[in-house]
Image (cartoon, rainbow, N blue to C red):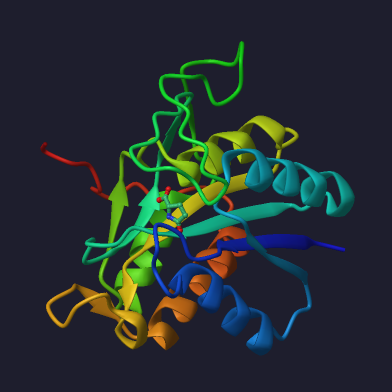
Length: 211
Ligand code: PCA
């Protein structure tokens, strides 16, 4: 049986909501299989998020792992291509921890690439009318830490990666914030999962960044 692990995050930084966690619930509510979908909303803590993720991966042995998080201010859904082995927290996490200049996983390489078909996901999102981009930095906070940990914990053959989402229109911090409707964010995550399940080899289309 093919298994997918899809995670989002709890609110952080004093925000009332986090669209990544809410969107994961939407995907779970609509999931029609036949693959098994396991979902979880991770705490925004360096220690708690990665220990929960490692537990979930050990328990369910997923074929596809997609972690999602909020990138407030971004206008597009970002399919992350590279996780760096670095934690450098600009704000405290939800435990009050603020690690600076530490490795995400001691002794691991400086960076790892997502093993998702990132270009095929980009193309599928664009075809569905969802603003999307390949992103080359998931930051150095809890999201990147979870992304790097997912790649570190994934056995060979697992497709693992990270998707950053904008604010939802329903929970924007201010009226001028860039947003997408929560329904569209959920649709984006479902498309990412479905594309990862159905794409054998990634598509070769431009998706790089000039700066
Ligand atoms: N976004 C943060 C952590 C949790 C989330 O949803 C980040 O990008 O690191």
